[in-house]
Image (cartoon, rainbow, N blue to C red; front, side, top):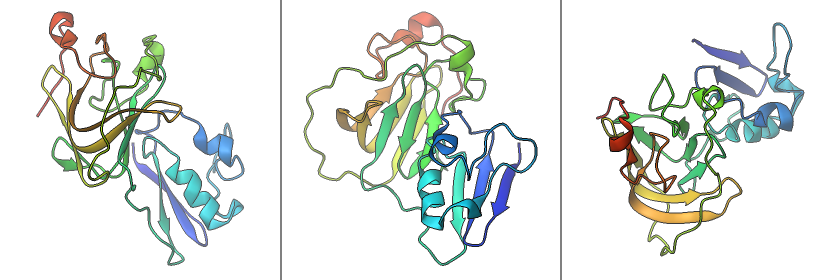
Length: 213
């Protein structure tokens, strides 16, 4: 799927439908900018001030919506705190300077944790049709504050196994509670762990198969 680019006077919106997980942050926050359920043009960058459009774009968890400033304004900065949010019955939403399988992957991506995606390691919404159920509010662990909270985050999908994540990271619930603070961890992507979002080795018993680095 090609990237749709819509230029306004002050900001251009780039939409990549292959990344979209239909979180609906865009159409709920500014339905005048991102107009749902219409034929033809549905993105209107000039309907709100540029800073409002930019804020809404940054709320897109998958990076399906990105932007370019045309007015000399600041492009999207790396977050001060690297996070992965555990979405209820859904994927892992990363916000960090990402390298996924060794490739630069931007600042916002959603990775499959149900094991059903046909576009692994990325989410393709298969969790909906597959009836995946997993809490977005796991119990927090005791953890120490990290010496640094930003920097490049490397995500390496393991062949037939979990996501190995290396770098400063706060694992966060869907409602914003910190679950764990880590500099290295393994996150479940087979959908079977009894300790979600973390791997507990269940991929071996379930016969999970997926490419890896």
